Length: 191
Ligand code: ZN
Image 1 (cartoon, rainbow, N blue to C red):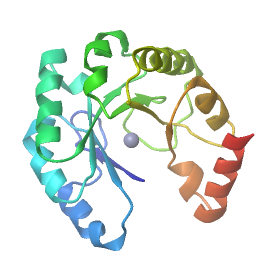
Image 2 (cartoon, rainbow, N blue to C red):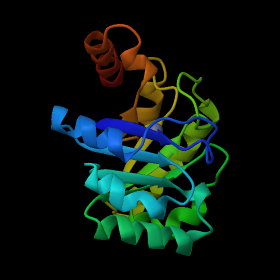
Image 3 (cartoon, rainbow, N blue to C red):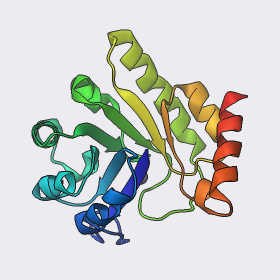
């Protein structure tokens, strides 16, 4: 999958790109577009991102006013024809999300404070990944756990061991030779 980090300069201090750029890269690849919206008021833009070619839309729990508000957004994502994701920052507890876990295709656990690439992995988040894995397995949900931030050949194995299904890597792949970096990352996870 191609993980697309959308930042609006409000929810996070940085600004990246929007649905127009995603629409322009859509014809270049058949890869699944996994769009991570680090933006305020995400409901306003869901239609635009799906029309731009996003297959998965992940929103932040922190850009919502409680679980009912997130549920509305997830419903809108599903109605627009995309898969649903909810992301949690390192400081945000996951337990309030237990009630919506069943409605999620993806839970995106942040292992850095979102906003900038190239940050160091926060080891203290690993137990949270393990707890969510346990909860999903216990209930037999199909929800996948994705982990985003500071993923490298050093940190990837512990995230996989804790129960992650999907690893999001930026700098670890694109700094240097992407093909070789991806191979190193895959090998690290197989160990
Ligand atoms: Zn991301």
